[in-house]
Amino acid sequence: MVEQIVFILVSLFTLITAVVVVTNRNLFHAALALMASFLGVAGLYVLLDAGFLAAAQLLVYIGAISILIIFAIMLTRRLMHALESPFNSQWGLGAFTAVVAFAVMAGVIAQFWPVTPDSVTPLASRPEVSASILRGSVAELGRALVSSDAYVIPFEIASVLLLAALIGAIVVAWPKAEDE
Amino acid sequence: MTPGQLALRSLIVGFIITFAVITGFAYTTLLERKLLARLQGRIGPNRAGYIPVPTRSGKPRRFLGGIMQPAADAVKLFFKEDITPAKVDRWVYTLAPMLAVIPAILILAVIPWAGEITILGQTFSPYFAIAPGVNVGIVFVLAITSIGVYGVVLAGWASNSKYAVLGGIRASAQMISYELALGLTVLVPIMLADSMDLGEIVAAQKGVIDWFVFRQPLAAIIFWIGALAELQRAPFDLLEAEQELSAGYTVEYAGMRFGMFFMAEYMKMIALSAITATLFFGGYRGPFVDQVPALGFLYIGLKTFIGLCIMIWIRATLPRFRYDQLMAFGWKRMLPISVLNFVVVGIFIVLQEEGILQPLFENTLRFLGIG
Image (cartoon, rainbow over all chains, first blue to last red; front, top):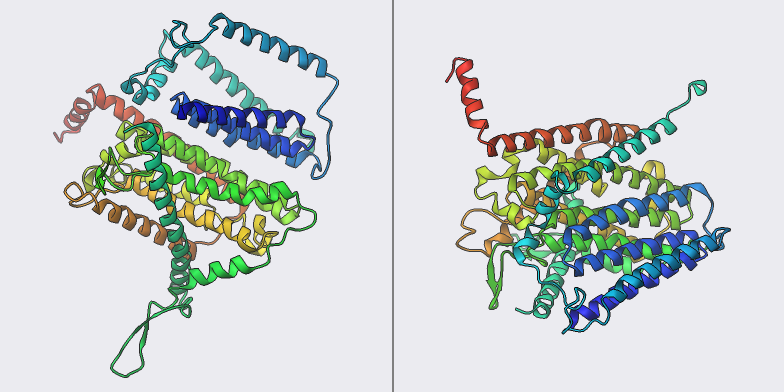
């Protein structure tokens, strides 16, 4: 009961701030709303007993990505009182993507509908997870990331991709020879 | 106990600890002013409030002069005019001080203040904290400190002033740079204790000889430097740099909103002192703490106090970094050392777990003709 109230509040917070992100005409305020929306998602992870995921969400999305966006806005244009239209020439394509994504998700949920406590569908009740698994979840996650029958290949590919991006950033920022 | 009761109890404990730390913040400002004054051969604030001690000469001696100084400061800040400059972004300008204070309070949630203890019929297990048993406690601390940069950046930007913007940008570049070294150093106590739960990290440091500062002095030093940079304390206080930036991001703030930035800084000082004590100095553990768990509060309070005194001592001693020195120090010294330290510790732990370390050590001794 309490959990459901908290869930509804956190979801509302996430959704409302997400709507503000796409409708606000001030780009800086939209970026702040995006950060608040990420915070709401972290709250949803906490409700799902995924503490490490929530902390990682805070660390990566709020601590790094949102700061990067805010920096980009701060340093590129004088936007203090400038207002932007939230639409651009690609709004039709964006709307199409959004509708398709919604249809896929609704279709998946409809597979398990109706959700009642008596039904045996996976969505009917929260699966019971033993406390020992929850306590050791970070260690399990770490082992899964480097074990060959789990996620070692995606993990290594992501590392190489990030390294390439890092080297690319250095190359772009490197002073050109004729400037010296 | 039901989750509802647990949440209610955490709320009450949270209120008590937060108010205790806010009081601590008030007296940390006094401690800083007094101690700085003594280190510089001055007396410091000694007028507001004192305890008269009668002496034989008839004229009472003024004991603990200046004890009410924080209260006087708070009253002054509350009654100052709270100015909002004309061309600021009102929303963000109001939001920034709040975003500075909230993370400073949130860090307190996972710090263990005592071991398993029974207060007023309530048993706190496995240890006394606002949110005990968070299995990712230390990652939570890092995540929350990374949010702290928002208060500074938003204050700088919203003020619509070049000094404020420069201060804000300096601060965030500094915090992001030193966060890396801080995060990598935190891995060392995690590996030594085999847990991210702050309570278990404390439990792994049973006696004084087991304190992680003696097993990993390098990690402790790097963590302390990183914490100072994260706090923007001297010698890393160049986002305030009064001589260059006229106080940086707080330049357009007045009254209690200005006070809130100070509150955030001093509360973070207390929190990071307590976390350093927890990670490297045995936290709430000390003599007889297993018999009398209430001593835990005393020990961690004492260790936090010593940490605060060292911070103030460093501020009085060291000159400020130049900006390029700061960046070079963070990226070319701190980061490589912490990566190397963490890799070496990891290798030794694996060697020990595989049972290779002991024979390797003995064979080396034999090879050198000692063993």
